[in-house]
Structure formats: structure tokens, C-alpha cells
Image 1 (tube, rainbow, N blue to C red):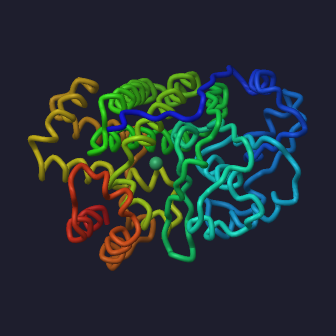
Image 2 (cartoon, rainbow, N blue to C red; image 1 turned 135 degrees about the horizontal axis):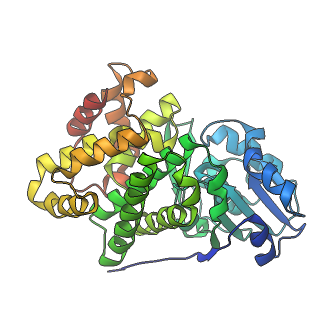
Length: 366
Ligand SMILES: [Zn+2]
């Protein structure tokens, strides 16, 4: 049994200037990022690399249409290393660019062995994705009508770099949704049948750090800006945990809903977090007890699920699926799509769930 795999080398640099120095960034490097992230950095730091901004190719989470436009553009550049600085979308797309070569249709990459063409340095600028340490990139495949992960050894970044100063300029909303995503990575990987003592160590570290941060942020909404090292370390730890043990039912359910209503990934997962945990507790109370006790200790709570729900509501108020436009026929359609397209994730659910149970869970979130 494999216990833990970690491919990228982990680094930490206090700010962007220190990163440019440590990695000797030159004009042979290509940076993929967003203008709102890079513009303030480039004012302070001399950096010779060419910068490509993702928003020039479309908005929202990565779709095959947006990625194909970017692949077409990037194929005209001559460069050595690819540096991704941003949230999950930027990091996931950079992984695809690093293996695309001359291919300009991401959908074709799902049917062929992946080979890396450029070294990839991943710098998360939000505290959620964990993508900097995993071998998966998630794409909204408009050809299938759902989000689906592209997975392969070649998708691992070569280096993952924590730069805490990026959190100082992160908008509150992005902090909230991305850190909830990281918390869900930690929870789902902890409960996965593939979890090992090593992956659970990373899950527990991440859960505890994020919940402690939430207790501080609940008192002062600006507090996260000074918690960059802690929060980025937590989201990377959660990434190591789910990169090995996998994410489960919450992520599986999130894709059909998030894909249809263009809900950002972390916010879309948040839809299903509490309902799924209550469902686990109801169906397998004995097996769930150990996790529940641990959560109770972290939150100093007698009813950990209720306390967690209250705390999360203070960080990010919960809105039901209907408020995003969901309709009565969605639960049945989403359940069918989840079973058809998300078997990779459903295999990591706490226990095996069927289409009827998934439909009822969607209905409870409507
Ligand atoms: Zn996620």
C-alpha cells in the first residue's frame, strides 16, 4: 500500500521579489497569472519574464473554450519555464499548457498519454486550491456539459512555492471561498477510504490551522491578511492530503451544479459540505464518530457539526442552490450526471452512495 507521494519540491519566499531572486526568473520564463495579481507586483519588482493574463482569454472558471484559445496563443511563444501565479484556475490551466506541446484542443488530451514539455513552477495566490502539489487539472468540458478532472503524472508541478505576501491583497470573498475549499479538501481526504496515517496527518494539520484562522477572522474580518504563511501552508497540506487520498462526494456533487450555474469552485463545494457530513453521520454513526470527536476537540464543541455550520456561516453566509438559479428538475439531472461523470471522486466517498441518495442530497440543498 502506497502511503504518501509528493512530487513537487516545496519552497517558501516572503514576497514576489524574493521569489524572482531565488528562482532567477529571466526573459526565458513565461508567467501565467491575472492582471490584478501581477500589476501591483510588477510595480515593485523588476521581472523580465513575459506575463500572460488569463482574463484576456475569458472569465470564470476554466472551460475548454477558454483553454483552447490560450493554448493557441501560447503555442507561438518560445520559452523554457512556465510559472503559474494565481488561484486554482491559473494553476490548473498552467498544468495543461505544460503538457500541451503543439496540441490546441484540451479535450484531445483526455485521450492520450501526457508528456511534460515545460518545467512548471506553481505559486498559489489564494489559500484554497492545493493544485500546486497535485497531478490534476479541472476543466469545464462544454462538450460534455460538466466539469471533469484531467489526471496524469506529467501534470505535477516541479516546484510549489508559498509566498505569504499574496494574501495581503486577496479580497475577503476569495479568502472565504478558497479557504473553505481547502477545509473541504482536508475533510474529504481524511474521510476517504484511501486515507493513510500520513495523508491524515496533513488533513488534520490543515483542518486545525484553517479552523483556528476562522476563529480569528470571525472577530476581525481583515485578520486573514496577516495569516498568509499559516493559510497557504494549510491549503498546501490539504493539497498533499487530497492529492494522495482523493476528494469525495462533496466535490463529485459540486461539479454538475458549479458547471451549470458558473459558481466558483469553493463556493460550489460549500453548497454540499454540511448536508453531506450530516448524511454520513446519519448513515454510519459509528464509523463517523472518530472524525466527529476530532472536530469537536478542534472546535471545543459538544455538537461539532452544528458548531462548524455556525462558524462557516459567519465566514461565508450559506445560500441554497435556488438562489443561484437552480430549478426543481436539477437534482435528478445533476445526480445522473454525477454518477455518469464523477466515478473517480465517488470512489473516495466515505462509503458507497447510489444515485437515489445523491439526488436526495441535491434536493436537500435546493
Ligand atoms: Zn476543491
